[in-house]
Length: 493
Image (tube, rainbow, N blue to C red; front, side):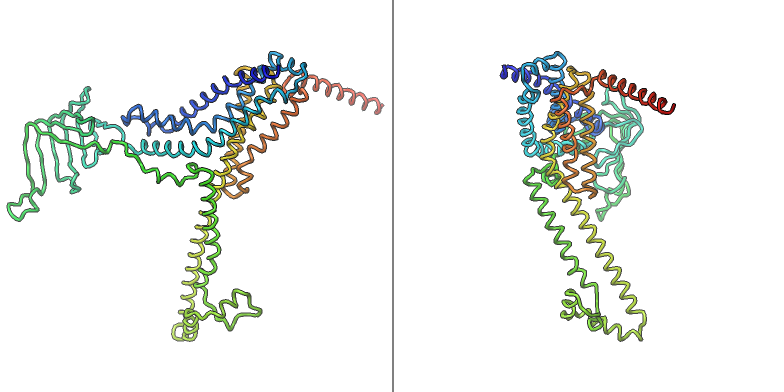
């Protein structure tokens, strides 16, 4: 019977889990399209490019979708068992709620381990490929779109204007072309009464076939010592201008330019990055005194006693800058403001040096916190799957509702709670308001405690979400209030 029960629960779990996972991935892909709609479309890149982009971002979405899918599917699974009194029958057979949750416990652990592997191996790869491809698409120019009465400047080296463009998108009227390919200004102008526009060689080149026009070139023969002319004009009945469309091709950026981002690193690489950043931070801080010492000039014989170790070290050193300062002090009668000007200059140098070091330390500290935060998220994102199971399974047994009604509402509420706490914890950690460990684990810690609370309530057959129980409590409180009021009147009399 136990094995049949385990199979029943697992079978009821997989269908809503896969469905929820697919829906969440689809929703986040729609969000991607809405955010980057202007950058993604209108560039004639081909369907295969968009399929590749959506594939990478589907993988990127999986760590976000797994906790929500686990929460909703366990809610629906145990809610359905409670709704049809199967959970009651299981308890009456002497099987506890924790035993009924055992198969899902094993599944949750397995999915959490898979989530950790995915976050550490597959996710950095998908982030690198996906965001590089997104950047390449965003930097690709839109498809050639020449509009009437407006100079079109997206073709490198040319500025084109047409007065009329016919419905076939090929026939043009009154065309003006400025040739800037030699970077010599507006010295080459072509005018034509009409033209045909088309592409050749698989859209690699754009052809303007011009009719009845003139070609003007200013300072055409200035490089020659003989027969110099200010302008050459050439009339034609038919001419062709060939323009390269290489600027509209999508160019692949080297992946090395993106590999240093934290989201594209494994936890081993993040640990090495954190150690390197920590060493750099300590090196800048430790060398600050030695580097700043050159800006301070002291007359050692005038130092008060007792001397600090740093002052003793300075006194033993014979710096040429010290002798220079003493000489300037002795000669201040010739120029009384020389020492003061020198002191002000040194003060400004010290301030500039200190601000530069503070800026470097702050930058290193921010990078270190972001790196450590991403390292912790390799674990927190995986643990979140198990935490959501710990909430969903007992809560489903408490609410006793299956389907996509109440479980969906509850799942969305807890998912939003998890998301908000994660974002706020990350923000607080990046701003140094809390240590990285607290910021990274805040969401999982709070939701884990909530899950333990629901598990305890489920074990005790709590009526936490049944309105009848609260009506009974309200009536009891009302009766107690009436008795208290009657007792006061009795004693007052």
